[in-house]
Image (cartoon, rainbow, N blue to C red; front, side, top):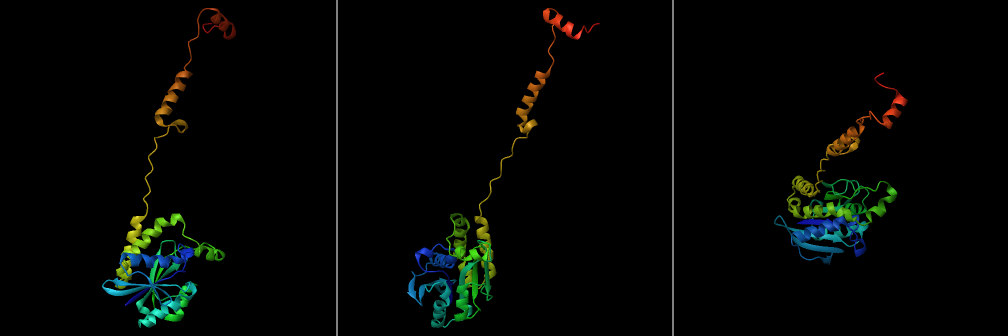
Length: 248
């Protein structure tokens, strides 16, 4: 049997926290594959169903993040499972938002939920890490992980959760590479396409569109043409006095 543990903190005040993305993924898988409704057991909430023809159990520990291992360890011992039968889904600071990493074993990276599971279950379980990005300084880590996803995050978060749920059977089959490839294809296709900018009209003098610039140039040229001077009359006499007679 496969045991999928989505990590998070219980209570509506934490529901949209970045730290709760494991709960969100667990809920998405349960909905997509028509698992039973969640019920209380093993100090958590569990739902039963099948993935790739095999029995699967989803658990969301209600012990708060730092004691996640109390709940997951209890379920593992009850069903006589090994760490290899467990997949833990959790948030990852050291991955860019929306990026995934799936691997067997490894360190806890300072994640208190993983520290607790390591203590109760050993380290040889698979971890599906969901990137939430790093705030840039360790002093801002707690507000970041315990803060809600921004509205703009929905553009990548919702397609990612859907893709995880749609391809969860590949995890159950042990096809980790195939799973990650499917996620990359699904989320890549979901990225908004940028509209191609319209080509501006070729600019003429002064940055004006060519047609306009030409008309202004023509107007200036025409206005610069010398006008014919009078050859007779008072004005002609005055000009002759000022500039002399060209014919002389």
